[in-house]
Image (tube, rainbow, N blue to C red; front, side, top):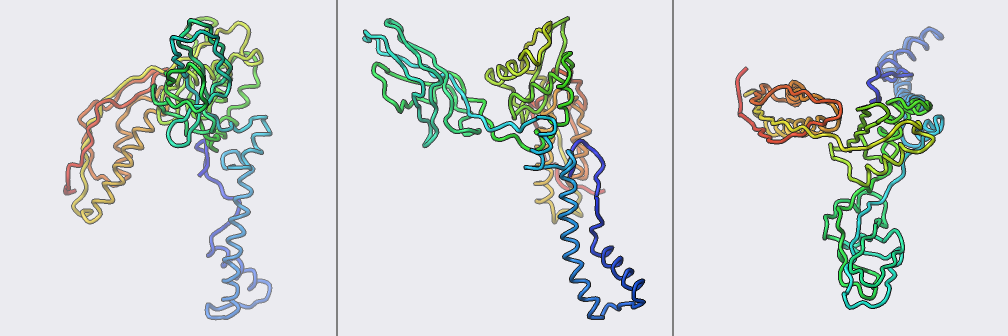
Length: 372
C-alpha cells in the first residue's frame, strides 16, 4: 500500500500467466516451434517463470523505494536526507520527583545528578540535575528521566515511583508527583514519511501554517495531528494531538513550544503558544444484525465487526476537526460483515478545527440474526 492516497503503481508485469504467455510467444516467433502443455521444454520454461516472477517482485519493490509514497526502512531514511529531515530517535519518559527530608537535618544537603529510583522490576529513573537543599527546607522537587528509551517508562501515576536506589542521608521519602510521560519509540515509517512530505513548508521564513505544523511534529514522534490557529494578530496558537487520540502532557507541549520558538523557525513578530485540543464528547448507540444465511460464520463476523467498531473509535479521535458522521461507522460495519446497522444516537456532530471528538457513552450490541 502507498501513502498519501495516490493511485497504486507497478513498474513491472508480475503475473505468472502473463510472463509464461509472453515467453511462449517469443519462442514461437523466433523458432517457429509451438510448445504444447505436455512438452518437457515447456515444463522447464514454467519452472523458470517462478524465478522470473520473484525477481520482478524484487525489482518492482526496489524501484518503488525511490518514491516517498512507498519507501520504508533505510530507503526512507535516505529519502529524508534529500530534505535534511531525519527520523526521530527513541526518547525516554520524564517525571517530577519529590524528596521529603528529615526535619532534624542541620546541614546543607546535596542531591547529586543521576540519583536513581527503581519502579517495577527493572525500570530506573535518574535525576536530571544536582540540587543543593539549604537548611530548613524539608521538601524539594527535581526532574527525573527514565534510563531506558521508549515507552517503557510511561504511565507511572503519582506516588508509584517510591524506591530510592542510591541512598542519601536525611531523605525520609521519595515519590513522583507527576505521571511519567514523553517516552517514545523510534519514529515509524508513516509518521516520518509525512514529515518529509510537508518539509518544503519549513523552507519559508514567513511563518505559514504548514511550517508550524512541520516543526511541531519534529518535537515528538507520538504527535499525529497539528492544527495552527491565529486567534489574534501576531498570536500563533498550536494545538497538538497524540496517537490513539491521547492528549499531550505538559512535557510534550513544552517540547513543541521549544521546537517552534527557535529564532530560525519563528518570525520575530509571532507570539507562539501551545495548547491541548478542546475535547468534544459524543454518544454512540448502535445495534447490528447478521443474515441467517451467514449464521455458520456468526462468530468470525462478530469478531470482525467488533474490530471494525474499535477501529472507527480510534479513527474518529486521531484527527483534529474531524466531524462525527456515523455513516462512516455504518460503512465500516457492513464491510466487516454486518447486514443491517441501526443507529439510535445522533448521526452527525460538527467539530471545529481546534477540537477533537471522543466517545462518551457507548452502547454497541449484536441484535441477532435477520432475513434479507
